Image (cartoon, protein in one colour):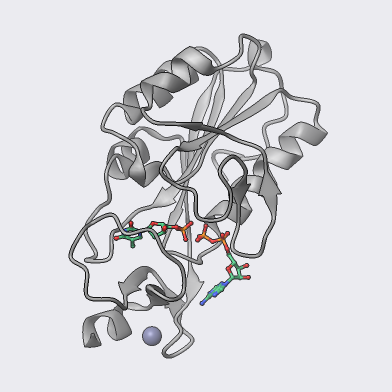
Length: 192
Ligand SMILES: Nc1ncnc2c1ncn2[C@@H]1O[C@H](COP(=O)(O)OP(=O)(O)O)[C@@H](O)[C@H]1O
Ligand SMILES: Cc1cn([C@H]2C[C@H](O)[C@@H](COP(=O)(O)O)O2)c(=O)[nH]c1=O
Ligand SMILES: [Zn+2]
């Protein structure tokens, strides 16, 4: 592996970096984000986590995975708030549901990484139509490491990379869970 995710040195000892965890809904993005952040905390690094204020599905402040693993976070309504709210001595920054942030998020991640901070970003790479989602493609282009994770296709059991919308709503942003979405592989997604 050219770039190891397990970087347990303080920011003063190492240049910063951007890591992306992407995939469909239920693919384990949040679990993987929480795993990396908790390991950094075990290594006694100072960790701060941010999420969009709009994402209140499970909890207003915590980042919570579908299997109820959780970590405290700071909800913000614009990526620029991250630069204002971040503490001075932070080693690692986590961002969840990055697809909902504005187009400034890639720049914000770059600023943090250039300050020596390890930035870990989790988000949907594609929307329900299979199109690249919000700032995710730009952050993936700038990242040292991109990890794509897969759910299990609920139709056939293959690895799933799409989030199939089950309800007739054309809006790009529609918060929801299993009542509104199911992870599907390419063939099952295209079968409709
Ligand atoms: N079809 C599925 N494929 C994989 N995991 C699923 C599926 N349905 C439910 N899950 C649960 O979702 C968990 C992943 O949750 P989470 O990390 O919150 O995913 P994401 O952030 O990618 O939406 C899995 O560990 C599993 O318990
Ligand atoms: C595909 C898709 C999803 N959403 C919403 C649905 C959920 O609230 C989140 C994704 O959460 P997860 O942690 O990845 O499971 O995004 C949306 O608004 N639009 C979409 O196209
Ligand atoms: Zn399938």
